[in-house]
Image 1 (cartoon, one colour):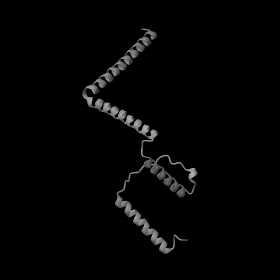
Image 2 (image 1 turned 180 degrees about the vertical axis):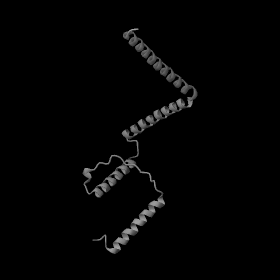
Image 3 (image 1 turned 30 degrees about the horizontal axis):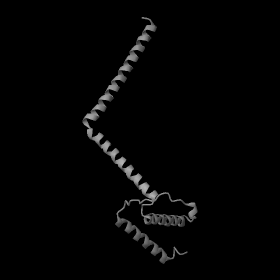
Image 4 (image 1 turned 120 degrees about the horizontal axis):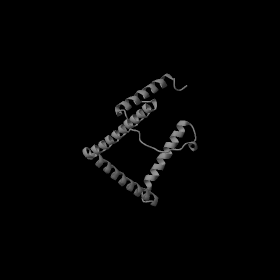
Length: 142
């Protein structure tokens, strides 16, 4: 055998082996997909329920948007929200010592408390007692 024949045979063997591996992996992926459908039909049902819930949520959101556009919602709630936003913006501006013109409140959301209420109360009382103690010493009012 010549060197050219050896290289040709080795390339044929390599391509055959790689093709066989790719074909085997493809068949295995098809088997896994089929087994998921056969043995876990609940997962596909859950996906269908989730998509159904999302569709109903979109319909509710569209109805809400239509109500807001048409003015069917309570104007008192909208007024309360705008007042709350104005109050929060003013408080932040006062804290940062800037004008409210420089601030824009994009969203307001409640941050859930990680500490129990008794721990928060204890911290507040401890802070107050230190402030009162410092005031009596005259360290704060300098």
